[in-house]
Image (cartoon, rainbow, N blue to C red; front, side, top):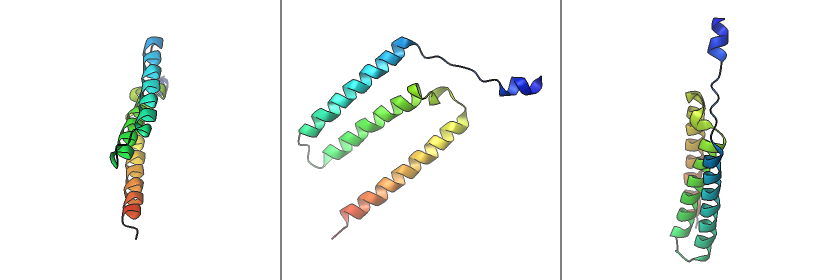
Length: 100
């Protein structure tokens, strides 16, 4: 009986209104990304596009994938994988910048 209580998971349901609101936000952010791609911001274009992509991915991960309501170990794995991705980006961009 004790084991059943420990393995029991809480199910958190996000309302349809919240899901539709997040979906509209994702569409708006995608439209902004397309608009930014057409505007010449110089070297800031890539950073703005990556910032918008980070916002969109955080919305998808937290709401649609329910990481916000999951156990802390999933958040730790997500942070470790995000940190690894950032290191890969930094190494790639530093190689690209310092190429002769």
